[in-house]
Picture 1 (cartoon, rainbow, N blue to C red):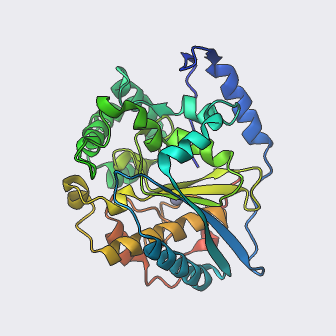
Picture 2 (picture 1 turned 90 degrees about the horizontal axis):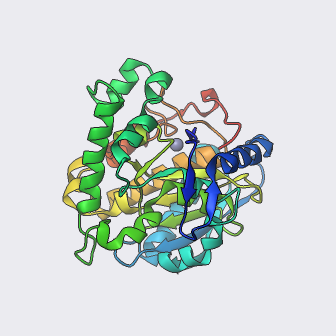
Length: 341
Ligand SMILES: [Zn+2]
């Protein structure tokens, strides 16, 4: 769940049609407000989790066998930890560009297109540092100084945090993909949408077939509503859930695998060089964390350090797994419930 700062701007967009973002923001907020309050999914009936795999050819991927193993492990752990009888099935594997082409109307049709327009702070925006500082400044109101320090280190204010954020994000984008090209640079500007939280938000809210989209790209970039743990990672969102009016679970999720699978100097330094098994186990636990949101409607937890409901505080995914994998009580029912994703 993210609280988005609504900028009062009128954007001129690709199709040269002028869109009044203030008005569309109000429509979007009204749409979300009218959705029914979230309810935990009961665990006495068997559940199906339909998964779509969206694959970018230029990034490390999971094989079909590895995915099958991941799904079986997710079923086993969801039963053990949450008591859910889950059947995970992959409904389709698609190429990421084809998938985005197939869903492009979701970036045009309001109100659900609104996140794709209003949330992103483009890496190519001349004003990006100022806008990132504005996006980060509410964190100082939301969290106490000790929590801020735990995640962001000794930064003095939002301006300093924005500079550090951009330094990290620039390193991530500058690293090479499997074809030897930078992940995101002026030569492939149009790929920015694949990394964009706002675009994925619009995709998820209008999704009608899948309960989860698994993709080997990463949700990596700046946006107007970044939580503390995303700010600390230079814009890396491992996965998230969005409201979805058509879903029996009231939401649809996405997990971006790139930060788990990347074998680049930045990720090996910040995350650690992990074995294939350690990467798969990290993805499994992150997915279980996301199921805590999707099925149990639990909020983000910053308090219980040994609970899987606490997002990994930085990119040290496997260190996080070691902290939580043998926890007996994840404190699920002490964590507040969300009203909306
Ligand atoms: Zn979370």
